[in-house]
Structures are given as structure tokens and as C-alpha cells.
Image 1: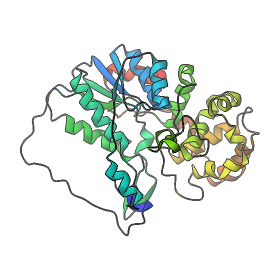
Image 2 (image 1 turned 90 degrees about the vertical axis):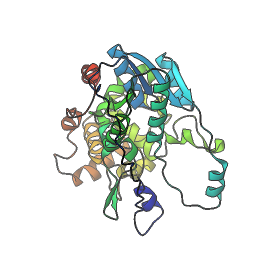
Image 3 (image 1 turned 180 degrees about the vertical axis):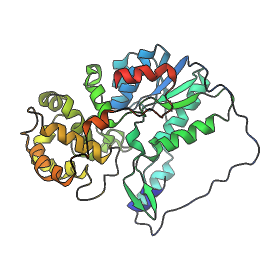
Amino acid sequence: GLGEFAVVNRLARLPRPAFPRATADAGHREDEAAALARALVPVGGGKDSAVAIEIVRRSGLDLALFSVGNAPAIGSTVKAAGLPRLLATRTIDPRLIDLNAAGALNGHVPITAIVSAAALLTAALNGFDAVALANERSASVGNTTWDGVEVNHQFSKSLRVERLMAAAVSEIVGAPRVFSVLRPASELSIARAFSRLPLYHRVFTSCNRIFKLDPALRLSSWCCDCDKCRFVFLILAPFMDPDALRSIFGAAMLDDERQYYGFALLTATGGHKPFECVGEVEESVAAIRLLAADPRWREQRVVRRLSDEILPRFAPGVGDPAALFALSTDLSVPRELTAHVHALL
């Protein structure tokens, strides 16, 4: 979890704090197979949470949404879904802001783990028996290696953390279960599913600049100049028309020559995969393969360069779209949701 902190701040080695557990026996519940009735779905305002909402909605479970804060994309997604929402708010300790201003070393906050913990508390307080997250399998793949450890910007979204959190919760009798309904799927599969949900196309935003703490730096929509904007544009493009994506983002990003190097970096060409919530290198390569064969996209300037300069660097089997569309089967999606995961993804 401190890997990115070490890399960004150029530490000589990775911090390795220890958190010893108490030795007393904890109670373990025996109801893992119990049927679900009420699910709480955290919403971040992006495509993933929209797909998760619709999977759980189709299951017929009693459903409500949850968010920490009410950024414009979150509020708009909640309104589009037409479902009740439980809202938690937060206040940043001003001493943290003062420390940052004084030049303290800073790092990526494991926000997904924090939101998941808040959602579990909210679910327990309001009679929900599950928190259904929207974390995909690509989140488990790291960015680079530092001091012998794989560094993953999305570590708190990974399957490892999901299992650690589920194991901790299982020690509490009657506590809600926690799992991700999107864990079997790649980002590419999720993008394909999202392209079929026009209800959310005008309201979602995955750009993290909408969450800036400083209101003067906070945006309300896509900045069209960051790794997250480029990745979401890239993986949605094979499943949408160029005019439709330009209308959503406000820019024709794959026809803008200035964007080329940013798109190339998504394939780890010229460096490691960016420290952002972006998918696997293979997913970006697969999206480029699909676009290069698509008459709607293949003549756009960035697509032409990616096809000519990036694809030849990869063996033909790398980034095979068919392989990335396949869903994993060894993950813990509850039986009430499995069929709906497959139907939507």
C-alpha cells in the first residue's frame, strides 16, 4: 500500500510497518451461504459503479446506493439511477493541509478501502446484508516494481484487499458481506457493457480532477488531458461512435495529435503504466487493435499512429480482445448475482 508513496517520493526503500493482531480468538460466523436480501452499492460517478448498479438492480435485491461526498458526477448518477442513496460526508483535518503546504511527503490515499469501510458501517447501521463494490479484475495488476515489491496504484481496489476485508468482516457475527460484482470482468468488458447503458452516458465522469480538495482546482466534468480521461476514452471507443464520444467528453481525443504520447503510455511504451486507475497494458493494446480494424476510427490521427508505431511492438497474441472479454470464474460473486453478471457483461 505504501509502494507508490515510495516510488513517487524516491525513497531508498519501501516502508514496511507492522500491524500485529491480537491473539484472542475471534468469533466466526457460519452464514456465508445465507441468501442476500438487501444490498448497498457505493457510487463514484464513473462507468464501473453504473454497471454495478444495473447488475444488482436486475437481481431483484432490495437496493440502495451509497457515496462519500456528493461530487457532481455522483449526484447525477444517483439521479439517473432513480434509487435511494445514503450519503456520508467528510471533513479534512486542516493540519493535513498545513503539512502539505509545508512540503510534507505526500502519497496516494487508498480511497477505495476507506469508502468500502464507510459503506460497511453504513450498511450495518441500516440493515443491509451486503456491500456490492464495483472493482474489476484489472485493479489487481500492478504498475511497476520497487524494492522487490509490486507497486499497484489500485491496490485498495485489488482482489487481495477485497479478500482481506471480507475475512476481517467475517469475524463479526451478523456483519454485512463485502464483494465486488465486477471482479470477474476486465475494464474492456465493463466498457462494452456501459456502452449499452445510455441512461448514464450524459452524467458519468471518471476524471479524478472532479475530486480535487481545492475548489479552485476542481472540475465538474472531463479534463481531457489526464491518463484517466485517455484510458476511459480509449476503451469506450470500440463500442461507440466518434461523434457520440466527442459529445460526452467535449473533445475528439483520438484525433488530436498532442494526445498521442499519453495514449502510448497506457501501453507502458516510454515508461511504466501510469499511476492512475487505468486498466492492464493488454486491455489498452486490445482497444487499439479493435480501433485499428474499425472504419469509424482507424483514420483518426492518434489511432493511425498507435496502429503503426505501438501495435508492432507486441506479439499478435498480446491484447487479444476475445481473451479479455472472457469472464473469470473463480471469484466470489454471490449466487444471486452470478447470472446477472454474465447477462450484462
